[in-house]
Length: 420
Image 1 (spheres, rainbow, N blue to C red):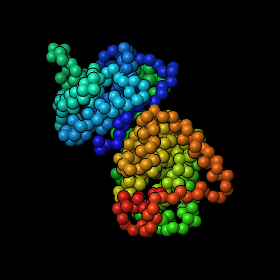
Image 2: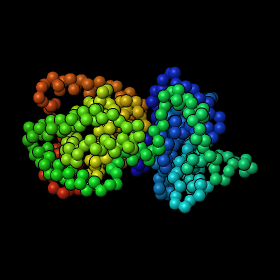
Image 3: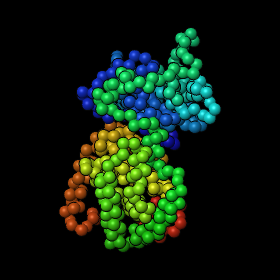
Image 4: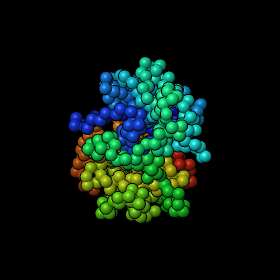
C-alpha cells in the first residue's frame, strides 16, 4: 500500500461516561460517519469493527481510495486483515464490520454513476472480510450529501436511484450525542489537509528564494563538522521559533480556520520562516521544539507549525515533514486525534522515511497514551535548562551525515545531509 493514512485500528481508550447512541438504520450510520472520525472523510475508504450482541463500535481505519482499480483487490485484502488482526491484538476479534466508501464525483458524473463506479471495491471488501469469517453487515456509499446501501438486495425497496439525502439537521441522534460528549467535526478531510499545504499564490517564488538563501547560509554551518557552529544554529533556530511562538500567543486565533490561517501567515516573514524551517531539519533542534506541547503553548504552537508547513514550497516541500510532525504531536498531546492523524499522514506522504512521524503515527494508531513521552520531554527540558546558555549535547547522526555545502541539490539529497 503506497498511501500513508490511518491504516491501523483506532482503539484509543474512551471515557466511561461517553454517551451511548443506538443507530438503527443505514441513514443513521451515514449521518454518524463524520462523528466517528472527527471530520468528513474525502475520497476515502472507512471500515469500522463491531463487537458483541449489540454491535458496539470498535476499531476503525481510513485509507484514501486508490485511483487505480487494479490496486483494489490487494488493498481490500490488506484493509480487512489490518482491521481484524489489529482488533484481535487490542481487545477482541470483531463480530462484524461496517464499510463506508466516500468517493468524490468525477467531472460530469451523476450521483448514481459515482456509486456504481465504487461497487466493485465494495464487493472486494465484503469478500475480503468474509474470507476472515467476519461479515460486512452494511456497506454504504456516501458521496455529495447522499448515501446508498450496497447490501440492499430488495429491488422493490423504493431506494432513490440517485441516493437518499443525508439530513443536515443538527437535531439528529448522533449530533445531539456528539454535543453532549464534546465531539467536534472539523470539516472535510480535504479542508483539513489544505490547512497544512502551501497555498497556490504568487508569494511561493519569494518564499522559495528565502529558503534557498537560508540553506546557503545555514547548511554549511550545520554540516561543517564544527560542533560549536551546530550548537549556535540550534540556539538561533530555537530563539527565532520562540519569538514567533510569542507573537502567535499574543494574536488570538480567528473563529474561521481558513481566515485564521491567513492572519497567521502574516505573523511570519519569509526569511524568518525559512531560517526556522531549515533549522528544524536538525533532529536535536526539532526535539527541543517538541517540548512546546502544553498550555500556554499548545494552541499557538499548533498554529505556528501549521504556518511553517505552509511555507515549505516547491523544491522544499519535503522539508515540511518536521513542522508537520510537530503539529501532529501537539494536536495529539491536546487530545485532537483527527488533526494529529492528518498532520502525520501528510508528513509521511512527503517523506515516508521520516522516523519521528512514523513512530508517533504508529503510537497514535495503537491507542497509546502520549503522557509518557510528554513526561520524558519535560525531564529533558529541565535537564537542559539546568545548564544555562547551553543546549543538550548533540547526538551524532549515522556515519556520513555531515559533509557538503548546500548548493542547488534535490530536496531529498538536501534533507538527507541535514537531518541527524
